[in-house]
Image (cartoon, rainbow, N blue to C red):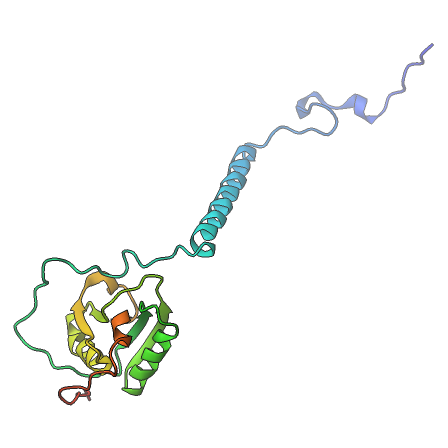
Length: 195
């Protein structure tokens, strides 16, 4: 025969506690929001890792959309001729798109010895033929022509909005034809340096 249990402190709980069982409390109104936040964070981390893997690890970074593509229609040029100058205050980025290892560093060193301020040096997975000097601001056209003259080897200048947001006002894209000439072409006229 069973003996009745003696009373303890849990037998005399007030009715207004709204508890079910000894250790349960009502659900918080924020518990759904916290679960959603954790889910969103986990999704963001997984997507970031997947994008990093696809883009950086597999080597699929290209300069599509960054390197300007030559258009069939010529761009409007001013009738006023701008003199080529070396402006040591205008930063120049150098991109190696020649397929030749170390070209960005060699070109940057050459330009530095000519008084050009070098920003970043980088390599492109794309290979282009022509060496181009791109600029976006018409105020640095003379400096862009000075960089092209310092490069020689048929380097051409082109005004384009493609690099307008870059810290450097001028971007040199070294093409494979740069290394097919025997030596850089000497300047036709002396280069001026602004005071």
